[in-house]
Length: 316
Length: 316
Image (cartoon, rainbow over all chains, first blue to last red; front, side, top):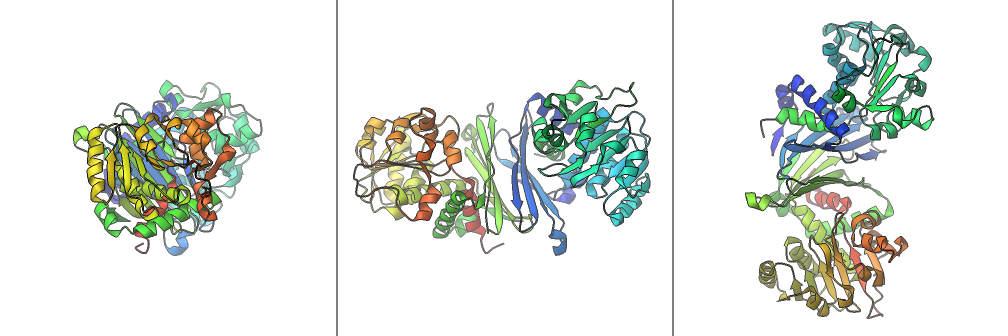
């Protein structure tokens, strides 16, 4: 079993290949040509931590993947990052473990940002006036960075609960060629933007439906486990298109779950991202400038399998 | 993350500590003081393989475990063993992966044999006339070897579908101090023994109820996935005590599942091994020489977590 350090993974990483393979992974998932057993979850209340195990096999791949990712939120007090994790790839021909990717969570961050890019490709307005980012952490930064290939817009409004984090976000993203305004509320962000990404661990609504302008697309990344929520469920109900990475997961704990539980929508309103990508069609009617669209991302193990495979491909 | 080879694991292995910790693991599982998310399963029809991911955390442990074990049954044609696997332990305080045990399936084999020992401890007759072993592979050998501490009996009758395998089993087990008769049918084994272990990958009944003498205990190890079966469900129905390692798993795919599906027993007849171990009581009434008892083992992730922890304990 070859062991890959985080630095080796980053050095080998080919973003175009990763995007292509993750897109194929979503398509396989929605087609039913991937095996994705239920996610395993742990909670460590005393240690303020959690862990999930996501495994997947995309039919025809040379390997299947088991990904372990942890978040232990008191780690910074110990001088450790909150997130850690690794991916193991095993041969789909012999079962033998062939690669251990000690990415420390890096691949998870990037595959999530790539899903945001694919979401924007199928659902963002053609003419993005300004990009709104809710949250200013690592994932918020990556989401913005990964929007570059799918929109020419570089105007950004950001809000996060931490002013210090928002300020460093603005500084860093300015360095990547964006023009960033830090706002003092999510409402002001919504008022000024028509492509919004929410990327926080929030457990309460951050964006109210009344604030969302007609014609806006929202990609919601934060609600990846029970109890998390960023969007007013009424936004989901208003949306002309509701895209989810996984109907099974999103209906259990994504943004969509809250709208389903409140009876605001029925499950037949949901379209999987893989189905949208396979169709090659946009889910937004570009002739209707007032449509609101939503993509709800909870993270599917096919992304982990495909991004890991994209790194090691040809080397095993 | 320290990486342990199979040889290092075996060198460090302390059987008494492993037995004690696995017993504690079963007790924690049945008490509900362990986290054991549902098993993840893969099937690779083209490669004649399967894989399962079992994860567990026993409350209070320093680490939690993720175990991956594969069986690819065409591997011997490639000069590879059928089974492979590894265990990763992560800190329950920080989430950081601390140990990778490349045991290639060895720990799974041993923890299964230890469960057989614990089963015999609570349910085997006090006076074992002779031990019956159905199957003659690696797990059958280990089951017999691990019975040594819980019975003085060394007389063995073995049957397996492969006469060659039975013969080498007899030779090897004779070397361990047993007196082994190879029998030409499972029926003859049953006629001559009152402690039987079934350890095959069978998908059909190997032991008929009519063959089982009063006073016999049977530990069934083989039925660890859907479609597998070794026992006539009527044996389960006749048993005075039906012990299972996991009610949740055994009622889905253990020997017990067939008796439940046929309406021969109700789920309230099942006792978990951990509950029996915690009580300190035997599940057999030793005053009744005609009682039949059954222990149905499907393999629970607490075993994997505890045996791995027993190896690395004090080193991380």
